[in-house]
Length: 323
Image 1 (tube, one colour):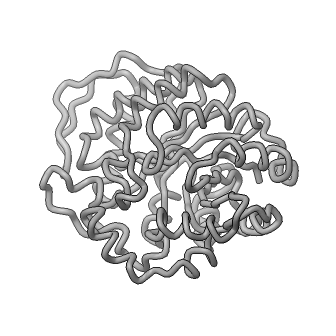
Image 2 (tube, helix red, strand yellow):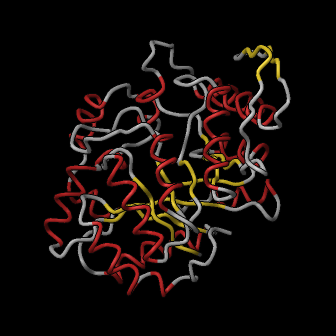
């Protein structure tokens, strides 16, 4: 398994994200993830820049490292025909280093225009139609589409990459994982679960699995625990709450039930890099090809220095990117 770095659009502003991308490449990380949000999960995270601007800047300051959106929901907030143009431009700028990660989204980001937030089966149906439409537009041909959820009239994308980027589909349950196996060029996950094996069994060989996880590297373990709990308690919410809660305020209310101990049990906190590595190995054992690590709470310079020296050498050499 290779180790990448996860750019958190919820926690860092655009200039800091660009600098982290450059630092990750210099440190030897294999690839980048970048989240695509309209809102952060809570006010403590405090940021949410427009991802397509940031991707353009990352393309300008990096040379080797590939980048995957983790993940874009191309269904409600932005019409898939516009997402198709944004991704084509990003892929052209990154010259073969762009991967398009997609998912069915969360009400937190996608229901901001007053649309009814559909139930899960409808969201997956919308995602499948959106992916089909995006792939048609990436051919550069004139496309007219009259589907169940989307209409396009005589649309053509002129600025295209040499090759269309692969589409990785995220999965948090059996239905979305099966959809990923059927329509995706790869799989994206944030859990070292049996869903990876389910995807591989249905998708067949050759399709990569990318993962994402969080750590809080800090010289003081107690302070790291406090930071992780303050900024990212939402990762401990059960069931479908992450998909259906509509505002950061609702997430803050729900996560009042999440304790610091609960977060610290899931998120490696502090300077003990052996514990960090032990946590990352769970994804390797689950079958993930490249795992993207997000540093919670700033201090990115110390994180990159420590990981470059003591964590990356324990995994595959970064090389040219993910499997």
